Image (tube, rainbow over all chains, first blue to last red; front, side):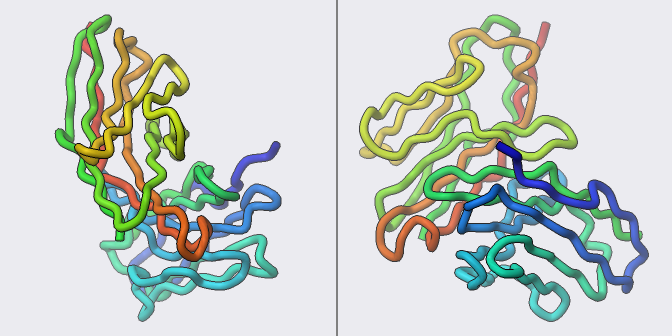
Length: 111
Length: 118
């Protein structure tokens, strides 16, 4: 069974630029999560999808972050414009019922 | 709502010694509980989970955890530490029931960095 795929693995951008991350979940998983993990902290949930509907986006900074899940499968997370404090690892995970399976993450550095 | 508190951001033990990582949770509904491990520059890997049934659960790499409802705890243990256990460990909670598992948030603690001394 293929795992959760994320790309790119690393990205360096200047502040005020835009960036997009892509996630392909495990086939058949209805739930998809995007987390932000700042160095030395636990993952913070940004947005959770159930199929292609948003379940929770209460911690998503909607003035600069956006996310969509196309046809209930792949998902993209976008930041525009980026700030220095957005430097973090962005983790995508998918779940069928209980546990979530994580991708390798995208390490974003904003300079 | 769910929340997780991991006691101790950094734990250091000697190789061969007992590993004990502490986790307390709060949940407004019966919880699913998880421990994940994260190695440098990698995603999170599931160590073990509690859903229902037996409160002592065994996971990979010799780890186990016990769900204690009265103490709202889910501490992770391993009898004998190995150098390869050095990593970051995260406890997580997810409620079940209500609108269904897909509608329940998966909330993580702040993590505990485990160091193994030779």
